Length: 236
Image (tube, rainbow, N blue to C red; front, top):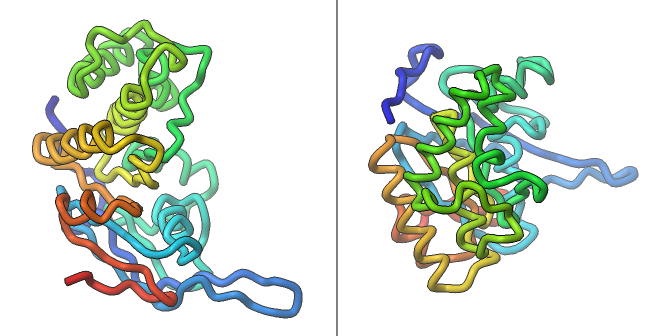
């Protein structure tokens, strides 16, 4: 599958996160989740974000995906400041430039694997025929060519996560954001998903930013950053 060059501004970075702070109000008190975080992610790079529960890893991922807004700072994806877009504009932008994979696959149970993977293409305005072809190709790429017609309830945990990965990749995004993609899988199945991510990154040139508790996976895939006491620290 060929990937079209990005049409965004001439930025060599997929993610350019500058001095981002996120605070929440709890009555008269302000709770700071993290402060002045900066992060750069290059095309085709894999970055793992680790840290204790409650450190703010998922909050950071939601900010990078435009699902939440920073209290201060700037987040650019492919050269575009996503938080200057309208809500509808952010949704369109996410569908084209970002993919998402979660610990729980969030597949639609009444639809087949093929139909689930077609969904982002159809929502983006693609014809049903073209969406079906793209979804078929991507499911084959993740090793599910024989499971297209199966619904999520008829698939194993690892197969469901592969469908979720195919759905995240079908629009050929510049970056995929992953929140504990192997957290609900056994070690053997998780290793299969890790190998798949590594292979897809190398084949397609897509950047991955992954929140994980799995240090073995984090270290095997690329750069590891620890979110600790509101700061991102490079793991040695």
